[in-house]
Length: 264
Ligand code: NDP
Ligand code: 8X3
Image (tube, rainbow, N blue to C red; front, side):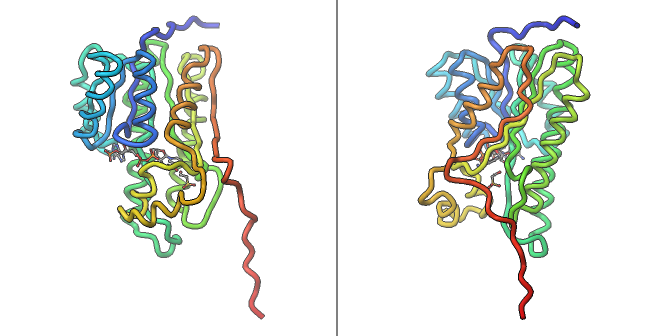
């Protein structure tokens, strides 16, 4: 048995993709609990607005805005070297930035969309992880919380590359657990199903009608539901590692396996 450096009561949390959806709500919940939060995403003005709102509610000096494209190793290197001292020892990384693009079958999918999903959901996630892990291991204190998806667990038509990126997240999470045994670093994969955020708007290239249709007449998960799961995993005692949490709305389940009947 080895000793751990205990988690500070006021933690420093980094949330990627904090300008919208799950990330924004997760940042808000951590700030509400009195923690310091680094909010990262590409849309700086949204992050500045979030900082203003959260600091008005929960206290000044608690939020640091990090305008960041997670696909850029160069940006990650530069911005991390410039983090203010008060935010430099990150206790929890929420790897949330991600996207789905398109729902076409594989043979019709846009290859550029596939590249962007791989760059963001896979490369962005491992770049952030690799950047933060050495400090966490050195301090024997840290928690990586990845946002995977049920799309990484189950196949569905049009899920092709998106689902595969989330399957990467699932297995990467498990392999991190294997590598980090003995370091006291915890790793969790949150695997949500249908949730109403800007996700579908992005997936359908800004087509609001098509995006709204996804959630119409159903009761999808909300960003608050996912933030609650992230908080729950983060707040377990140090000896508990939540490996994964899979959530679906009650109004979502699996369909039967599809069979192509030979035409007579
Ligand atoms: P949103 O579109 O509302 O939020 C996505 C966030 O990711 C935005 O803040 C966006 O910020 C950020 N982002 C995208 N690309 C980059 C990039 N290159 N660098 C930095 N930030 C980036 O969707 P959700 O909140 O729903 O999605 C969050 C995560 O949850 C994603 O990983 C998604 O795959 C996953 N998920 C979503 C589900 C859903 O049904 N909604 C279900 C299961 C998983 P900006 O554009 O400002 O950079
Ligand atoms: C998002 C959930 O079912 O739209 O990851 O792929 S789903």
